Length: 85
Image (tube, rainbow, N blue to C red; front, top):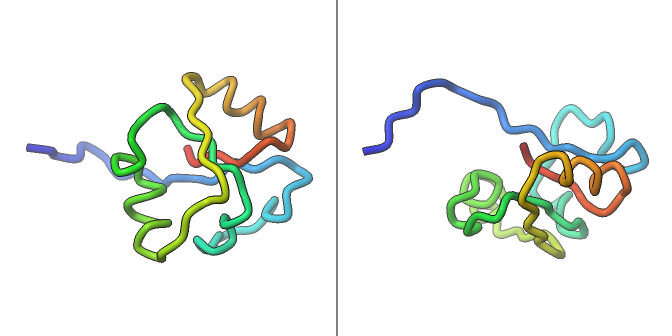
């Protein structure tokens, strides 16, 4: 049995040069041309997919899995993708 212990808000991390930088909200279709960087988990288990992209019939251009948050953030800062954390 899965019992949530707290609410959280998932945020999209983008670099300062990304077109979505500073946007208060993002729609799934806005991520179609991006590389989505996530932890190495099956997409079906990731909220960004099962609660946001998949219900809208959307998928990112590319999905890259990275082990650690610091590397994810470095890749985002370098303009190599976006991350949902």
